[in-house]
Image (cartoon, rainbow, N blue to C red; front, side, top):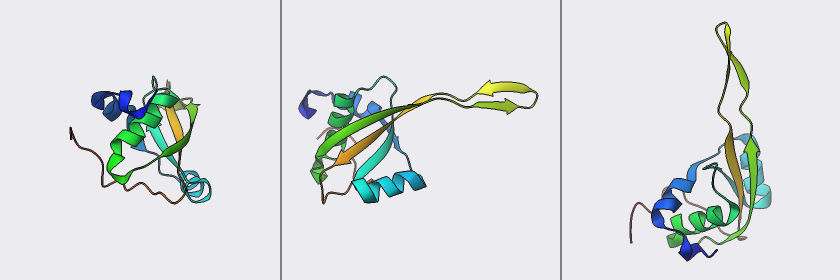
Length: 110
């Protein structure tokens, strides 16, 4: 699947948020990867196409995508046991020397 074959509406739905943590920062510095929360139904090709579409003005080139499913934790709510929702995260590798500027994202159609 090429980045041009994804619809703009689907691209805006796939990437939910960047995942900011110590581990994500270390991975960004060491391996030039960005960690995103993504839609649970998204696959690697769609994630790659969505990232390249959303930051196409910065000419971001995705080199690889790794996906991890995060299981929801069991938590106690008063005397009841509950469960947090499961979610999916994607480790998106970008080309050496490139950097994603999160303030410059495509808001709508060209």
